[in-house]
Image (cartoon, rainbow, N blue to C red; front, top):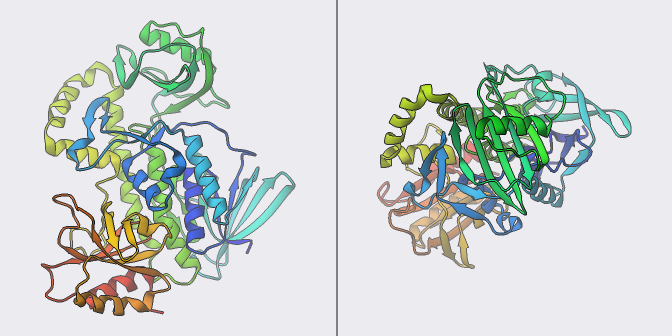
Length: 505
């Protein structure tokens, strides 16, 4: 084996996954066909849930000042995220290229090997397809030094919407094809007025947002433009012509710094894993880029998969742990396609859907509807169903909360910097000692922390909670409160530890 895991694709998903694998103790090689990062930035920020994930790994300071806003949109209609306590639309103004640079630096610091200019040309599953220690995957690749052959126990395709791993691995990829072509460009010297939510025009929709230094990001969605199979990016003249048809404004005197095209296709694989082959990010799901969700969901895929795959190759995983990746992330991907297609209909279908837009706008004014949509687009409503929910925190992200413990101030996200599981007890009472004694047999996989919330906000989900078992990705595997038991239930906690972290050492 050249490595236990080979990740194909050095975008946000692949880089996040490689770092998570290293945190979990697995060797990993990342292959990317580009000789160097493209520097292009389709994404310009990340959602609140992904911001939490970066925070739990201590990465947020690397992005510099992060600006957030409570205001977003759904299908071009304003949506106020403050209807959810402490929520926001996400971090704005952070180009995808910077996200990739931060993730690449983090991954290599942890020991991942990134090989650029390596294009995978062939895939062969060898020794069976069940992902056990006798199986594996052979890859053929064109490299700067000529053709090479590599072998790994697992291969993860993070290689985008035209994934070689997905095609070569025989994954089923049903969905709906694109019905129109749209343009995205960064233009300089045009002095455009801001249309950050988007502006509906008789022939389509346009969007523009200032990026600074006289550069604007524009999106042009002109109805009646069938998708084209291109071998390269469109010319800036095409974008300028479409912009003028929709707005009457001539931007031909400006400079197209970067031009791209995209469509409204929506596809998702039926399975995220086929034996030793797995998919994450755009390789598993492609969709209209509505609401800035694509990069964030891809990173969340990687954070869910990384610790599970590292435990599997390290021989620590309980039976079936790797299958929970499909069980947990496929529904999230399906929900992503659902909401982006809905936004596309509302945004791009012209005057025929205006009555629907009016009804939808009225519904969005209802607090419950606003909370539902804000939770959906931000990812804050994600709950993984393990079949053993009892406490309201189980299956959800541990809430962000400052804590005071023996070592001073910390936080629920700070406890997760090492990428390990955490047993957090929130009281110093003597009855918690039984939990600590029971969890000692998992000391090689989880950390034990006793702390108290520092000024918890009213209605905090941690209110009344006495203990919580937190997975490495920040989701709660087990929890209990004062009301549940007269004494802490060490047996139920040990069952959760075994289910997610394997048998005791």
